[in-house]
Amino acid sequence: MADAKVIPFDEDRPRRRSSPARRVRVAQEAPVTPVAEPVGPEPVVEAVPEQAAEGSWDRRIAGGLAFLRRRITGEYEVDDFGYDKELTDQVLMSLMRPLYDKYFRVEVKGIENIPKEGGALIVANHSGTLPLDGLMLQVAVHDQHPAQRHLRLLAADLVFMLPVVNELARKAGHTLACAEDAQRLLEAGELVGVMPEGFKGIGKPFGDRYKLQRFGRGGFVSTALRAGTPIVPCSIVGAEEIYPMIGNSKTLARLLGIPYFPITPTFPLLGPLGAVPLPTKWTIQFGEPIPTDGYAPEAAEDPMLMFNLTDQVREQIQHTLYKLLVQRRSVFF
Image 1 (cartoon, one colour):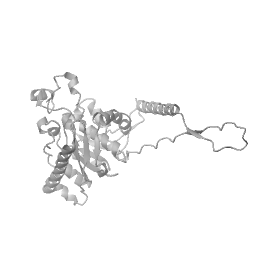
Image 2 (cartoon, rainbow, N blue to C red):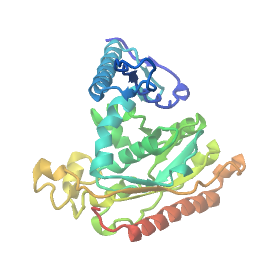
Image 3 (cartoon, rainbow, N blue to C red):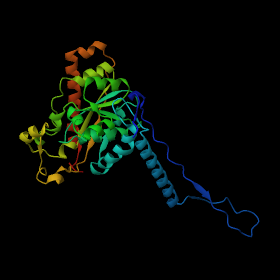
Image 4 (spheres, one colour):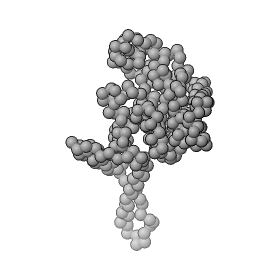
């Protein structure tokens, strides 16, 4: 199999979907009458729905075959980080979309706060025992934003140590959570997503749900300042309840080399069935962006400024979480 062609990541730009096909209309012949003069204009009827459906399926099959051909021959493009835009749009997003639309029924607010173009850092809370919130955030940005922008998530080292998961993460545009990679993406005009709570947030007990953990040393703020890109706070409600973590087997976690081994009401009691998440109702809200382009270049080295901006982002996310919790009617509806 031929190798994939590698292109610089900043040349990979999101494209708008092509406009829908125009409706085909056919003219019906006027019936023959003994009257010499025509009664009126010829009636027009729409094309038969079955024929339009057949044409749609033909296009889908042709597109799928062309996609498979490019996969087999290696005639597809990836960027310097391994991001495969075509695979993400046509396969990975399609796999995640039913979970997003039908299962979690995600509602998105404040999407207009994400810039139409240029770099921006989206900072969100992290929860849920398994990192499904990051995947749903990625779908939300792509499907709800008018420009259908792609979110490049910063992931923990563990993600890139796992077989299969490592390859899929790279193909979906995820990269290592380090300042160098984040700054390169931001300066190239990409949207970058980060969840500063890390494993402390995703693996916290159910009793601490929606209580933000420590945001680290503010490395994400320093990166945004160096790139001169805005910071967009993001609050996610609903992910905390998909796997209610009532315990943590530290012994098993050490044996498996993972940060925690969750115990929920259904896992490991029900085995693989216990790994099915609960169908909670999600809300994702993007807050007003915090600009950073007004600071001097040396501001990224000011620890007091780092602390203040980090605290501002954290407080804005926490306040929005409380507001969304008050507004929601039920965990599942």
